[in-house]
Length: 313
Image 1: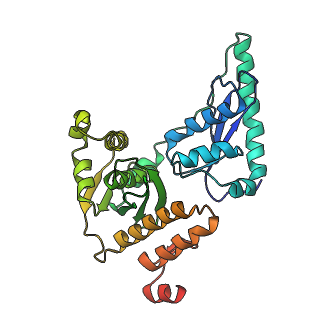
Image 2: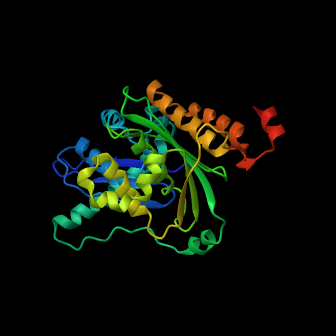
Image 3: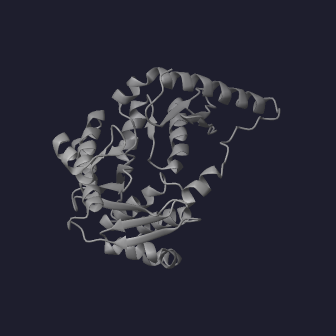
């Protein structure tokens, strides 16, 4: 089986008639089986997806259920693989599905005859990265969000780190507004950066910075605030444990390389959603923005000087 270039959540299920267990698996050795008494194959797949959402949208959800894919996209889940992407790794999906469906099927058969159900192996926890990341200098990351106010509830969000790491997503903020999107951009960092890494997060949103700094007070008085605002602040608070984070304001559109780059990527992410563009080619636009903005060449994962960057672009 060819090695995949990015982590993939594979959504799978075992059609057990009136008792269909659902399962999903993440590549790179991380497997989780999510059990549920589903009345149909479709509801088993939906149950499998639901169990993956807690991981956030930093990995792709692959499913061959077109109806489920469309429902997820309509609900604003932006990390759903297209049918084209699914077909590219179809054999890998089938291999994972076959393996995990057998595991899930056996667990249900154990339960039916009142035998002890074997535990599902859980990922091993490790503290190896704690000392390594804790000794590193504070990492500067700029965040931004883009939203067509009054036209859609979906916003593009992005963050760009000084070491070249980055993210481009869309989130459905309902009627929570652009500030909620700015907060989700901040939260998205925690999914990819080790918790021991000290962070300096730059944002050009004064309201988002205020909400971040006053999040505990706001959560305590949740009845006075918008539910979407409370939702993202609670998510941030859960991820702040053992983190050393400084959040600072930078003036937008004022020549800050990281901020300008994050701004362009967030707008690009929103435009992808508006155009319905789910092609793999769209990531070349991100590559170009990173190269022109901070001189980061994603193909080699290295920085090049300004002259080389101008020639390459």
